[in-house]
Length: 196
Picture 1: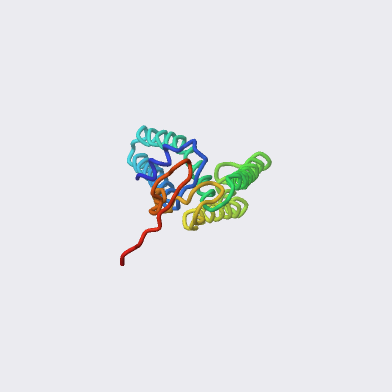
Picture 2 (picture 1 turned 60 degrees about the horizontal axis):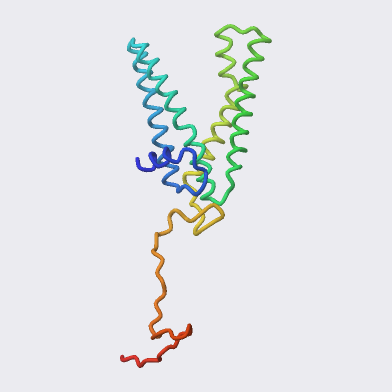
């Protein structure tokens, strides 16, 4: 839960790096909350409580809007942890938008050109014209998601910041044992005998 709250606090921060755990827990919690709201809304609608179902849909939409900036920035910071530029996220988004636009365009053209009724629209949606691109899109989206969750980040400091998994060490000033005093701006050292 701490990673989820941390990601929300950093909703507008694209600097730095995000660990696998931070990205994974944030994604899992978001999916669980959204799925739970949809499931409860579906049960409410099925049990004859349409107002409750509508309210849960609105809550789910507001939740999606709330986490939208955080989901973008955490993905960018996760890419930084892998040593990749945040611009890769733009390429990913463009691919998803193009496929969704293709699906919508084919659906709209099929409805307009063929003047389909409701049953024909459902049949068209279940045909390969829509399901194949949609299936490929889902494979691509979840493939990228799994890559971001399970790929270990770069060790040590990279161009985007320090390794978030690196242990925090205190900076210790070196101690000079043989310097006895400073006279006239020059250091004089004593060579002492060490006993064993």
